[in-house]
Length: 146
Image (cartoon, rainbow, N blue to C red; front, side, top):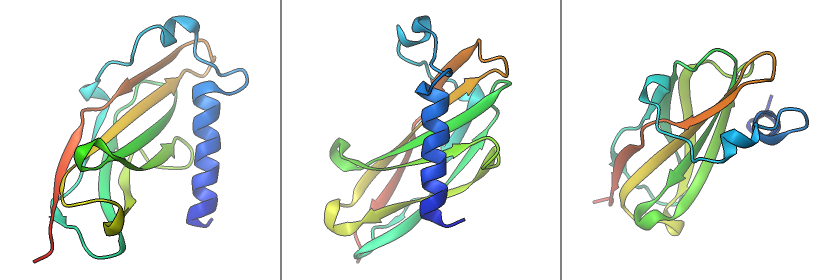
């Protein structure tokens, strides 16, 4: 499956888990913002050099989700709080631990500290219980090329 087709399939799975027909979270789950759950997993990325043009930069994720069908959404935030990209992983399509990539384009950002925010959503097999929570924020630095 191509990377584009895989991304489209994952977006569909995530949308179904988070707000699709018959899978919408209970109203009580939407009343409060998700909490941070370090026990559910983490993301990590290495410091590096922000190269010319557009390049792929790898990051790792490792999950220990609660029982049920899970979906992970990742968000890349650049220096100054600028949103730069996102990714998605889901049970049945991706392992609970692995490597993914963000495509970062030098013309659209600058060197500095980047952050990865990751939201894990889990629904039990009966469809009755839905939980979501943030993993701890990952920070990494991309410095200017010398």
